[in-house]
Length: 438
Image 1 (cartoon, helix red, strand yellow):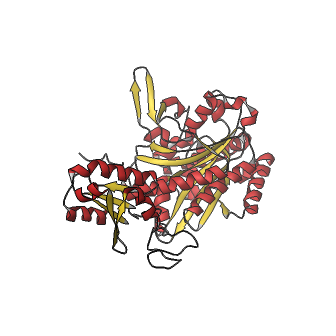
Image 2: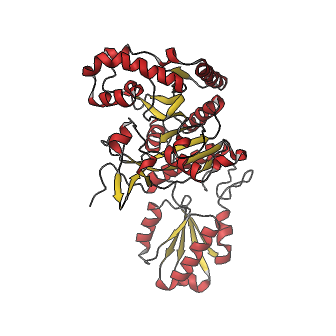
Image 3: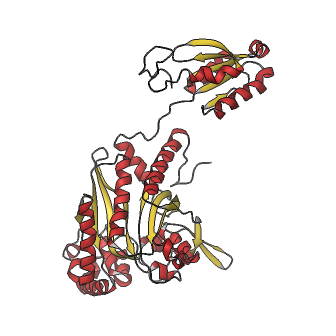
Protein backbone atom coordinates (compact mmCIF):
# COMPACT_ATOMS: atom_id res chain seq x y z
CA UNK A 1 0.00 0.00 0.00
CA UNK A 2 1.14 3.55 -0.72
CA UNK A 3 0.29 6.95 0.70
CA UNK A 4 -2.77 8.54 -0.93
CA UNK A 5 -1.92 10.87 -3.82
CA UNK A 6 -1.62 14.43 -2.61
CA UNK A 7 -0.71 13.46 0.97
CA UNK A 8 2.62 12.94 2.75
CA UNK A 9 4.33 11.19 5.65
CA UNK A 10 6.75 13.07 7.92
CA UNK A 11 9.24 11.47 10.29
CA UNK A 12 12.68 11.93 11.76
CA UNK A 13 14.52 15.06 10.66
CA UNK A 14 11.62 16.20 8.46
CA UNK A 15 9.22 16.05 11.40
CA UNK A 16 11.69 18.05 13.49
CA UNK A 17 11.69 20.76 10.82
CA UNK A 18 7.91 21.03 11.26
CA UNK A 19 8.37 21.26 15.03
CA UNK A 20 10.95 24.03 14.57
CA UNK A 21 8.53 26.10 12.46
CA UNK A 22 5.73 25.44 14.94
CA UNK A 23 8.00 26.64 17.76
CA UNK A 24 8.66 29.91 15.91
CA UNK A 25 4.92 30.34 15.31
CA UNK A 26 4.16 29.89 18.99
CA UNK A 27 6.89 32.33 20.00
CA UNK A 28 5.68 35.04 17.59
CA UNK A 29 1.98 34.63 18.39
CA UNK A 30 2.70 34.66 22.13
CA UNK A 31 4.48 38.02 22.04
CA UNK A 32 1.62 39.41 19.94
CA UNK A 33 -0.91 38.27 22.56
CA UNK A 34 -2.64 35.52 20.54
CA UNK A 35 -3.90 32.27 22.10
CA UNK A 36 -4.31 28.94 20.33
CA UNK A 37 -7.66 27.57 19.19
CA UNK A 38 -8.18 24.00 17.96
CA UNK A 39 -11.33 23.37 15.96
CA UNK A 40 -12.61 20.04 14.56
CA UNK A 41 -11.14 18.73 11.32
CA UNK A 42 -14.67 18.39 9.92
CA UNK A 43 -17.71 20.63 10.33
CA UNK A 44 -21.26 20.78 9.03
CA UNK A 45 -21.03 21.66 5.35
CA UNK A 46 -22.94 24.91 5.92
CA UNK A 47 -19.99 26.25 7.90
CA UNK A 48 -18.03 26.49 4.64
CA UNK A 49 -20.69 26.51 1.92
CA UNK A 50 -22.53 29.77 2.24
CA UNK A 51 -25.26 31.00 -0.10
CA UNK A 52 -24.11 32.00 -3.60
CA UNK A 53 -20.42 31.56 -2.77
CA UNK A 54 -18.38 31.86 -5.98
CA UNK A 55 -15.04 30.58 -4.70
CA UNK A 56 -13.38 27.59 -6.33
CA UNK A 57 -12.82 26.11 -2.89
CA UNK A 58 -16.56 25.84 -2.25
CA UNK A 59 -17.61 24.95 -5.79
CA UNK A 60 -14.89 22.45 -6.71
CA UNK A 61 -12.49 21.46 -3.97
CA UNK A 62 -14.32 20.43 -0.78
CA UNK A 63 -14.35 16.87 0.55
CA UNK A 64 -18.01 16.48 1.53
CA UNK A 65 -19.74 13.35 2.77
CA UNK A 66 -23.18 12.49 4.16
CA UNK A 67 -23.78 10.97 7.59
CA UNK A 68 -27.46 10.16 7.87
CA UNK A 69 -29.32 13.44 7.54
CA UNK A 70 -26.20 15.55 8.01
CA UNK A 71 -23.74 16.74 5.39
CA UNK A 72 -20.20 17.07 6.73
CA UNK A 73 -17.09 18.55 5.14
CA UNK A 74 -13.40 18.17 5.91
CA UNK A 75 -12.24 21.70 6.64
CA UNK A 76 -10.74 23.39 3.55
CA UNK A 77 -9.72 26.53 5.50
CA UNK A 78 -9.51 27.69 9.09
CA UNK A 79 -11.36 31.00 9.39
CA UNK A 80 -14.93 29.71 9.17
CA UNK A 81 -14.46 27.17 11.96
CA UNK A 82 -12.83 29.75 14.22
CA UNK A 83 -15.69 32.22 13.71
CA UNK A 84 -18.25 29.45 14.24
CA UNK A 85 -16.59 28.66 17.58
CA UNK A 86 -16.40 32.35 18.52
CA UNK A 87 -20.17 32.64 18.06
CA UNK A 88 -21.08 29.28 19.59
CA UNK A 89 -19.07 30.05 22.74
CA UNK A 90 -20.65 33.56 22.84
CA UNK A 91 -17.25 35.19 23.26
CA UNK A 92 -18.79 38.32 21.74
CA UNK A 93 -20.87 38.69 24.92
CA UNK A 94 -17.92 39.78 27.06
CA UNK A 95 -16.48 43.12 25.88
CA UNK A 96 -13.44 42.59 28.12
CA UNK A 97 -12.39 39.65 25.92
CA UNK A 98 -12.56 41.68 22.72
CA UNK A 99 -10.88 41.70 20.38
CA UNK A 100 -10.45 37.95 20.58
CA UNK A 101 -6.98 37.13 19.21
CA UNK A 102 -6.55 33.50 18.17
CA UNK A 103 -4.22 31.39 16.09
CA UNK A 104 -4.50 27.85 14.75
CA UNK A 105 -2.32 25.21 13.13
CA UNK A 106 -3.41 21.96 11.56
CA UNK A 107 -4.44 19.96 8.50
CA UNK A 108 -6.82 21.25 5.82
CA UNK A 109 -8.24 19.37 2.84
CA UNK A 110 -8.88 20.44 -0.74
CA UNK A 111 -9.46 18.23 -3.76
CA UNK A 112 -7.19 19.89 -6.31
CA UNK A 113 -4.39 18.77 -8.59
CA UNK A 114 -1.33 17.98 -6.47
CA UNK A 115 1.84 19.84 -7.42
CA UNK A 116 5.05 21.01 -5.79
CA UNK A 117 4.17 22.78 -2.56
CA UNK A 118 0.44 22.06 -2.99
CA UNK A 119 -1.25 18.96 -1.55
CA UNK A 120 -4.75 17.59 -0.99
CA UNK A 121 -4.05 17.30 2.71
CA UNK A 122 -1.97 20.29 3.72
CA UNK A 123 -1.30 22.17 6.92
CA UNK A 124 -2.07 25.80 7.59
CA UNK A 125 -1.14 28.27 10.25
CA UNK A 126 -3.54 31.18 10.62
CA UNK A 127 -4.55 34.01 12.92
CA UNK A 128 -7.91 35.66 13.51
CA UNK A 129 -8.79 38.84 15.42
CA UNK A 130 -12.54 39.13 15.98
CA UNK A 131 -14.75 41.71 17.66
CA UNK A 132 -13.16 45.08 16.88
CA UNK A 133 -12.90 46.87 13.54
CA UNK A 134 -9.74 48.93 13.28
CA UNK A 135 -7.19 49.68 10.55
CA UNK A 136 -4.53 49.34 13.27
CA UNK A 137 -5.52 45.70 13.78
CA UNK A 138 -5.25 45.14 10.02
CA UNK A 139 -1.71 46.50 10.12
CA UNK A 140 -0.86 44.47 13.25
CA UNK A 141 -2.09 41.32 11.47
CA UNK A 142 0.22 42.00 8.56
CA UNK A 143 3.09 42.85 10.92
CA UNK A 144 2.69 39.50 12.73
CA UNK A 145 2.91 37.61 9.45
CA UNK A 146 5.85 39.71 8.31
CA UNK A 147 7.67 39.04 11.60
CA UNK A 148 7.07 35.31 11.28
CA UNK A 149 8.37 34.87 7.75
CA UNK A 150 11.33 37.13 8.53
CA UNK A 151 12.16 35.01 11.60
CA UNK A 152 12.20 31.94 9.35
CA UNK A 153 14.79 33.59 7.12
CA UNK A 154 12.45 34.17 4.18
CA UNK A 155 13.69 37.28 2.37
CA UNK A 156 12.61 39.90 -0.16
CA UNK A 157 9.04 40.11 1.13
CA UNK A 158 6.59 42.67 -0.22
CA UNK A 159 2.99 43.04 0.91
CA UNK A 160 0.52 43.29 -1.97
CA UNK A 161 -2.29 45.43 -0.60
CA UNK A 162 -5.76 46.38 -1.74
CA UNK A 163 -9.13 47.42 -0.33
CA UNK A 164 -12.54 46.05 -1.24
CA UNK A 165 -14.24 48.89 0.64
CA UNK A 166 -17.53 48.78 2.49
CA UNK A 167 -20.88 47.44 1.24
CA UNK A 168 -21.72 50.59 -0.69
CA UNK A 169 -18.30 50.60 -2.38
CA UNK A 170 -18.57 46.97 -3.44
CA UNK A 171 -22.16 47.33 -4.64
CA UNK A 172 -21.17 50.19 -6.93
CA UNK A 173 -18.09 48.33 -8.12
CA UNK A 174 -20.05 45.14 -8.90
CA UNK A 175 -22.40 47.16 -11.13
CA UNK A 176 -19.44 48.70 -12.94
CA UNK A 177 -17.78 45.32 -13.46
CA UNK A 178 -20.95 43.71 -14.82
CA UNK A 179 -21.42 46.57 -17.24
CA UNK A 180 -17.79 46.30 -18.36
CA UNK A 181 -17.75 42.51 -18.86
CA UNK A 182 -21.28 42.19 -20.30
CA UNK A 183 -20.00 42.45 -23.86
CA UNK A 184 -17.01 40.14 -23.23
CA UNK A 185 -18.70 37.07 -21.76
CA UNK A 186 -17.84 34.92 -24.78
CA UNK A 187 -14.14 35.59 -24.14
CA UNK A 188 -14.24 34.39 -20.54
CA UNK A 189 -13.53 30.90 -19.19
CA UNK A 190 -16.40 28.84 -17.78
CA UNK A 191 -15.46 29.66 -14.19
CA UNK A 192 -15.52 33.37 -14.94
CA UNK A 193 -18.94 33.09 -16.53
CA UNK A 194 -20.15 31.63 -13.25
CA UNK A 195 -18.34 34.30 -11.25
CA UNK A 196 -19.93 37.01 -13.41
CA UNK A 197 -23.32 35.99 -12.01
CA UNK A 198 -22.28 35.12 -8.46
CA UNK A 199 -19.61 37.69 -7.61
CA UNK A 200 -18.06 39.71 -10.43
CA UNK A 201 -15.22 40.88 -8.15
CA UNK A 202 -13.83 37.36 -8.39
CA UNK A 203 -13.30 37.83 -12.14
CA UNK A 204 -10.18 39.81 -11.27
CA UNK A 205 -8.75 36.78 -9.45
CA UNK A 206 -8.78 34.54 -12.54
CA UNK A 207 -5.40 33.19 -13.65
CA UNK A 208 -6.72 31.83 -16.96
CA UNK A 209 -8.17 35.10 -18.27
CA UNK A 210 -5.63 37.42 -16.64
CA UNK A 211 -4.02 38.45 -19.94
CA UNK A 212 -7.26 39.28 -21.76
CA UNK A 213 -7.56 42.91 -22.81
CA UNK A 214 -10.94 43.17 -21.12
CA UNK A 215 -9.25 42.19 -17.82
CA UNK A 216 -6.52 44.78 -18.24
CA UNK A 217 -9.04 47.53 -18.97
CA UNK A 218 -11.46 46.59 -16.16
CA UNK A 219 -12.61 49.38 -13.79
CA UNK A 220 -10.58 49.84 -10.61
CA UNK A 221 -12.00 49.45 -7.13
CA UNK A 222 -10.33 52.69 -6.03
CA UNK A 223 -12.68 54.68 -8.27
CA UNK A 224 -15.75 53.41 -6.41
CA UNK A 225 -14.68 53.72 -2.79
CA UNK A 226 -16.76 55.75 -0.36
CA UNK A 227 -14.97 58.46 1.59
CA UNK A 228 -15.14 56.31 4.71
CA UNK A 229 -13.49 53.39 2.90
CA UNK A 230 -10.78 55.64 1.49
CA UNK A 231 -9.97 56.99 4.95
CA UNK A 232 -9.89 53.49 6.44
CA UNK A 233 -7.41 52.34 3.78
CA UNK A 234 -5.25 55.42 4.27
CA UNK A 235 -4.93 54.58 7.97
CA UNK A 236 -3.86 51.01 7.14
CA UNK A 237 -1.16 52.31 4.80
CA UNK A 238 0.00 54.91 7.32
CA UNK A 239 0.41 52.20 9.98
CA UNK A 240 2.44 50.01 7.60
CA UNK A 241 4.59 53.01 6.72
CA UNK A 242 5.23 53.61 10.42
CA UNK A 243 6.28 49.98 10.84
CA UNK A 244 8.48 50.22 7.74
CA UNK A 245 6.80 47.20 6.16
CA UNK A 246 7.20 47.34 2.35
CA UNK A 247 3.98 47.17 0.34
CA UNK A 248 2.60 47.85 -3.12
CA UNK A 249 -0.98 48.62 -4.08
CA UNK A 250 -2.42 45.79 -6.19
CA UNK A 251 -5.82 46.81 -7.51
CA UNK A 252 -6.45 43.31 -8.97
CA UNK A 253 -6.11 41.63 -5.57
CA UNK A 254 -9.50 40.39 -4.34
CA UNK A 255 -8.55 37.09 -2.58
CA UNK A 256 -10.14 33.72 -3.21
CA UNK A 257 -13.01 33.74 -0.72
CA UNK A 258 -16.17 35.80 -0.90
CA UNK A 259 -16.36 37.03 2.69
CA UNK A 260 -13.62 39.68 2.51
CA UNK A 261 -14.27 43.42 2.96
CA UNK A 262 -11.99 46.45 3.28
CA UNK A 263 -8.31 45.41 3.58
CA UNK A 264 -7.01 42.39 1.66
CA UNK A 265 -3.34 41.44 1.38
CA UNK A 266 -0.84 38.88 0.17
CA UNK A 267 2.80 38.63 1.23
CA UNK A 268 4.90 37.83 -1.84
CA UNK A 269 8.50 36.65 -1.46
CA UNK A 270 10.89 36.84 -4.39
CA UNK A 271 13.08 33.77 -4.05
CA UNK A 272 16.30 33.75 -6.05
CA UNK A 273 16.92 30.18 -4.90
CA UNK A 274 13.56 28.96 -6.22
CA UNK A 275 13.54 31.33 -9.18
CA UNK A 276 9.98 32.42 -8.47
CA UNK A 277 7.67 34.81 -6.68
CA UNK A 278 5.50 32.96 -4.18
CA UNK A 279 2.77 33.99 -1.75
CA UNK A 280 3.79 33.08 1.79
CA UNK A 281 0.72 34.33 3.68
CA UNK A 282 -2.51 36.06 2.70
CA UNK A 283 -5.75 37.28 4.22
CA UNK A 284 -7.90 40.29 4.96
CA UNK A 285 -10.83 41.77 6.85
CA UNK A 286 -14.31 40.27 6.91
CA UNK A 287 -17.50 41.89 8.20
CA UNK A 288 -20.31 39.36 7.71
CA UNK A 289 -19.10 35.99 9.01
CA UNK A 290 -20.02 36.56 12.67
CA UNK A 291 -23.57 37.47 11.64
CA UNK A 292 -23.75 34.46 9.30
CA UNK A 293 -23.17 32.14 12.27
CA UNK A 294 -25.84 33.87 14.34
CA UNK A 295 -23.76 36.43 16.21
CA UNK A 296 -24.01 40.22 16.28
CA UNK A 297 -22.62 42.57 13.63
CA UNK A 298 -18.89 42.24 14.34
CA UNK A 299 -15.83 42.45 12.18
CA UNK A 300 -12.73 40.26 12.00
CA UNK A 301 -9.38 40.16 10.27
CA UNK A 302 -6.96 37.31 9.70
CA UNK A 303 -4.55 35.54 7.43
CA UNK A 304 -3.29 32.02 6.73
CA UNK A 305 0.00 30.53 5.60
CA UNK A 306 0.70 27.09 4.19
CA UNK A 307 3.15 25.27 6.44
CA UNK A 308 4.63 23.25 3.57
CA UNK A 309 5.42 26.44 1.68
CA UNK A 310 6.93 28.11 4.75
CA UNK A 311 9.27 25.15 5.21
CA UNK A 312 10.15 24.96 1.51
CA UNK A 313 10.98 28.66 1.28
CA UNK A 314 12.88 28.78 4.57
CA UNK A 315 15.07 25.88 3.41
CA UNK A 316 15.58 27.52 0.00
CA UNK A 317 16.98 30.56 1.81
CA UNK A 318 19.46 28.40 3.71
CA UNK A 319 17.60 27.95 7.00
CA UNK A 320 18.05 24.28 7.90
CA UNK A 321 15.29 24.61 10.55
CA UNK A 322 16.53 21.45 12.30
CA UNK A 323 19.66 19.32 12.26
CA UNK A 324 20.36 15.72 13.15
CA UNK A 325 22.69 16.35 16.08
CA UNK A 326 22.34 12.84 17.45
CA UNK A 327 21.78 11.73 21.03
CA UNK A 328 23.80 12.32 24.18
CA UNK A 329 24.26 8.77 25.39
CA UNK A 330 23.78 5.19 24.18
CA UNK A 331 23.73 2.44 26.82
CA UNK A 332 25.29 -0.78 25.53
CA UNK A 333 23.93 -3.86 27.29
CA UNK A 334 26.14 -6.94 26.82
CA UNK A 335 24.09 -9.51 28.75
CA UNK A 336 20.44 -10.29 29.41
CA UNK A 337 21.29 -10.17 33.12
CA UNK A 338 22.11 -6.47 32.71
CA UNK A 339 18.90 -5.37 30.97
CA UNK A 340 17.11 -4.10 34.06
CA UNK A 341 20.13 -2.12 35.27
CA UNK A 342 20.67 -0.76 31.73
CA UNK A 343 17.09 0.47 31.73
CA UNK A 344 17.61 2.09 35.14
CA UNK A 345 20.71 3.93 33.90
CA UNK A 346 19.01 5.03 30.69
CA UNK A 347 16.04 6.33 32.67
CA UNK A 348 18.36 8.21 35.05
CA UNK A 349 20.11 9.85 32.10
CA UNK A 350 16.77 10.96 30.67
CA UNK A 351 15.63 12.27 34.04
CA UNK A 352 18.78 14.42 34.08
CA UNK A 353 17.89 15.93 30.72
CA UNK A 354 20.14 13.82 28.50
CA UNK A 355 18.83 12.32 25.27
CA UNK A 356 19.50 8.63 25.77
CA UNK A 357 18.78 5.28 24.18
CA UNK A 358 19.81 1.68 24.89
CA UNK A 359 20.20 -1.70 23.29
CA UNK A 360 17.50 -4.14 24.38
CA UNK A 361 18.66 -7.13 22.32
CA UNK A 362 22.10 -7.65 23.89
CA UNK A 363 23.76 -7.83 20.48
CA UNK A 364 27.48 -8.12 19.95
CA UNK A 365 29.69 -5.21 21.01
CA UNK A 366 30.55 -4.55 17.35
CA UNK A 367 26.84 -4.33 16.39
CA UNK A 368 26.11 -2.02 19.31
CA UNK A 369 28.98 0.32 18.47
CA UNK A 370 27.46 0.60 14.99
CA UNK A 371 24.29 1.79 16.71
CA UNK A 372 26.37 4.30 18.66
CA UNK A 373 27.72 5.63 15.35
CA UNK A 374 24.31 5.71 13.64
CA UNK A 375 22.74 7.56 16.56
CA UNK A 376 25.67 10.02 16.66
CA UNK A 377 25.88 9.46 20.41
CA UNK A 378 28.37 11.59 22.32
CA UNK A 379 28.86 8.90 24.95
CA UNK A 380 28.74 5.09 24.93
CA UNK A 381 27.94 3.50 28.29
CA UNK A 382 29.08 -0.13 28.36
CA UNK A 383 27.43 -2.49 30.83
CA UNK A 384 28.32 -6.19 31.04
CA UNK A 385 28.19 -8.86 33.77
CA UNK A 386 31.56 -7.78 35.26
CA UNK A 387 30.41 -4.14 35.49
CA UNK A 388 27.10 -5.29 37.00
CA UNK A 389 28.93 -7.30 39.67
CA UNK A 390 31.13 -4.33 40.57
CA UNK A 391 28.39 -1.67 40.48
CA UNK A 392 30.10 0.34 37.73
CA UNK A 393 29.58 1.32 34.11
CA UNK A 394 32.26 2.03 31.51
CA UNK A 395 31.71 5.46 29.94
CA UNK A 396 33.39 6.23 26.65
CA UNK A 397 33.51 9.80 25.37
CA UNK A 398 33.29 9.33 21.60
CA UNK A 399 34.97 12.60 20.57
CA UNK A 400 38.15 11.97 22.59
CA UNK A 401 37.92 8.16 22.85
CA UNK A 402 38.56 8.59 26.57
CA UNK A 403 37.04 5.73 28.59
CA UNK A 404 36.60 5.41 32.34
CA UNK A 405 34.92 3.01 34.74
CA UNK A 406 32.49 4.97 36.95
CA UNK A 407 30.24 3.99 39.82
CA UNK A 408 26.53 4.16 39.07
CA UNK A 409 25.99 7.03 41.50
CA UNK A 410 28.76 9.06 39.84
CA UNK A 411 27.54 8.52 36.26
CA UNK A 412 25.70 11.83 35.85
CA UNK A 413 28.46 13.91 37.48
CA UNK A 414 31.05 12.30 35.20
CA UNK A 415 29.07 13.06 32.04
CA UNK A 416 28.25 16.57 33.30
CA UNK A 417 31.97 17.28 33.59
CA UNK A 418 32.35 17.08 29.80
CA UNK A 419 29.83 19.79 29.14
CA UNK A 420 31.44 23.19 29.36
CA UNK A 421 29.91 25.70 31.72
CA UNK A 422 30.39 29.35 30.82
CA UNK A 423 33.72 30.76 32.09
CA UNK A 424 34.98 27.28 33.02
CA UNK A 425 37.84 25.37 31.43
CA UNK A 426 37.07 22.16 29.55
CA UNK A 427 38.42 19.17 31.59
CA UNK A 428 39.24 17.33 28.36
CA UNK A 429 41.30 19.82 26.36
CA UNK A 430 41.77 22.75 28.75
CA UNK A 431 40.22 25.24 26.34
CA UNK A 432 37.53 27.55 27.84
CA UNK A 433 35.97 27.97 24.37
CA UNK A 434 35.99 24.27 23.57
CA UNK A 435 33.18 22.51 21.69
CA UNK A 436 34.39 18.95 22.11
CA UNK A 437 31.71 18.33 24.70
CA UNK A 438 28.03 18.96 24.08
